[in-house]
Image 1 (cartoon, rainbow, N blue to C red):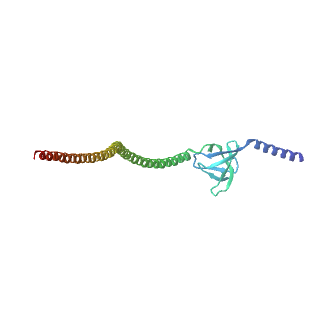
Image 2 (image 1 turned 60 degrees about the vertical axis):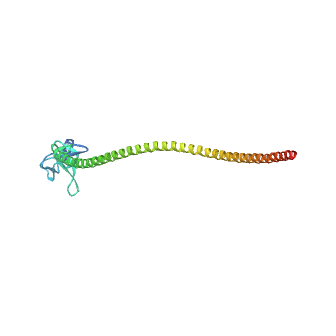
Length: 230
């Protein structure tokens, strides 16, 4: 009886070992449920095991072990609790399902369209701003050209004014010099006239005095002659 019990225990242990060797434990890896409407998650790697949850396309799971065509996965329920069960490996894939990727691409496309619309609006705004700036630049260029021409004319006029000013100052200096020389000459002429007048006046007086003397002398001589005759 004891031998039979020992053999039975040994047989059970062997069966457990064989079952254990059929289940491969591995490091956790990410996976997604394929493009199926829904798959069952069971308590064990067989369709006879109890269903504990329904997983849907795109649900993210963590694969912790495999056994034949089955994979043990960890997943998060809708209420936020974590659960673990077995699903058929063929319903798992490393990449997200095409449906989810399509939805993501559609969303990304919509986002890009919005960004494109915003960029187009910004481009239109910047284009208008650029046109306005170009117009302002053209106006400023024209104003600058006008100012440059005015400056050139003013510069030429200033140069001419400076030249005329120098000529005027030179002429004024020459005029002042000529006036001073004229005043000097006028004084000299007046002095000469005065000295000549005095000379002529003296000479006239001298001539008059000499005439008086001569007249007196000749008068006496005549008297002397007449007395001799009488």
